[in-house]
Structure formats: C-alpha cells, structure tokens
Amino acid sequence: MTIPSQYARFITTMVARSYDRRLHLSALLLGFFPTISKAWLSQPIAHVRRSTTQRLATTTPCLSGEQLQELKENKYLIVPAFIPESLQQSLRQDVEQLRSQNYFKVAKIGQDLTNMLNTKIRVAETCFLGKSKKDLPQHAGRQELYERLDRLRTDLGVFGPLDDDLTELLYAYYPQGGFYRRHRDAIPGSASVLRTYSMLLYLNKDWNSVKDAGQLRLHFDSGGDELPPGESPFYKDVDPEGGTLVIFQSDAIPHEVLDTQKKRIAVVGWFNRPMSASDIATLSEGSPMKMVLLSISAALMTAGILGLVT
Image (cartoon, rainbow, N blue to C red; front, side, top):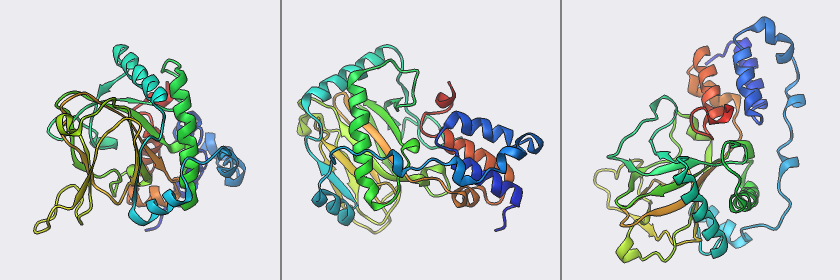
C-alpha cells in the first residue's frame, strides 16, 4: 500500500507531537490547510519529539526481576498487597466522592465509532483518570497512585518502549449484579492495538470470594471473545481482593468480570506503546480521511470522547 507523500509526512509529524494532545488536535486540524501548516510540517521530526527516555522515573522499582520474568513467561502476573490499606482507603473515598459529584458515567464497550452501550455485555460505571485530567478535583491518594503507576510503567519498559502520554487509566465501579463478559483489550483494526499491558488494581475491602463472587477470569484457550468450538474451558479466576495488582499482555489474554454480588471497585489501566505512522497507515487502509480521523481517535483515546481538550 502506497501512502501519498503529503499525508505520510503529515501523519508522521502528528505522531511525533502526540505527547501534547492539545497541540496534537490543533495540528491535525491545521493539516487540512497545507498553506497554513506548510512551514510547521517542514520541521524535522527529531526536533519536535521529546525523548521518552528522559522522562522515565528514577525511583525504586515496583516489580522485582523475578516478577518481571514471571510476567514474560506466563503473560500475566498477580501481585498481592501491591498498595497498602491506607492508600486503598483513600482511593475508595475518592471513588465515592467522584460518584457523588457525577464524574462517573455508565460504561460502554468498543472504541472509536463503535463505542456503545450494551448491558448484555457490560454493567458498570467508569471515571477516566490521568495526570492531564484537569477537570477532576485534586486528591492526594490519586496523586500517589499516579506516582506508583509511573514506576510500574518504567518497570514494564524493560520489555519495550511505553508512552507515558498514551497511558489509559480509569476507576471502574461495578454495582451489585454488575459484570463484563469475555472480551479482549487489544482489537486488531482499532486504536486499541497500541495497548501492550493491561492493569487492574483492586480496592475492595473484606472481599469474600464465595459470597461476593465478582472474580476476574483470565482465559487461556485459543479463542478471542468466545471459546472456540470443540475446546474445553481453560482459565484462572482471580479474587478482586483489595490491594491486589493484576498485569497481563493486552493482546494475549481474553478475560471477563464474573457477576458480582456486591459493589466492586478497581483501578483499570492500559500501558500503550508509542504510535507509529505505520499503525495509522495500516488502520486507515490508504484513505487520507481515515488517516486523519484515526490520528484524532488515538489522540483522544485516553480520556474518553473530548475530555482531553477541555
């Protein structure tokens, strides 16, 4: 597939500037007017892309070498007591305050233009988080969470580059009776292919797996969103006990949230690799308009619809 040179240059430059999303969105719009953006587009990419390496955290690692090796071999890792009870309590209070102030929204499924409400697949509420989310009230526990997850992202970076600016993060609240049917986090043909590692950090206090249910089920069969015909189920259930961290490769493990019998709270996130021009070229199928729309979609994917430009 051949990409017209003017669009290839445009998209590559957009990728290079994706660390500042307001500039990213503005630049995408300027791209429609070559006479206005010609001088800007002529800048060497190396001059506009700040170094990811320079932004890496230098604090104490979150994961040991043994844990990283386990993640590499098994494609998932479970870490009990990843955060102390004091931080769990602070984050639970944050969730309750944000819900009372209507920051949570009914969770949808899908990405881009396919994002929709489907209560047969998912019943939950979400609130998008992130250091760039200026509309959320400040909270000390949330800031500590960001610092810990920055360190976690740095640890995971030993396997390949991860872009801090493309990290997706949210609170997930499941009411009694809530669930999320089997699904994948990285879907070929959508911007979610950037997702490299999925992360869940549970905040539930005094969870009883027999009475409360609501386990995370990791599927290890060869299927995607469904069990392949003729295969036997092969899975592992993880209790959503407070403080437990679960990490897995986003494109490798289908998973689901079993029906929960009481409210269930977690921090959910995805650590994404840097976007490349080839990603957009592949997804756009050679259409210049699709290239632009996919660039905008990828720029917005971490905040839910238009949260990044408010």
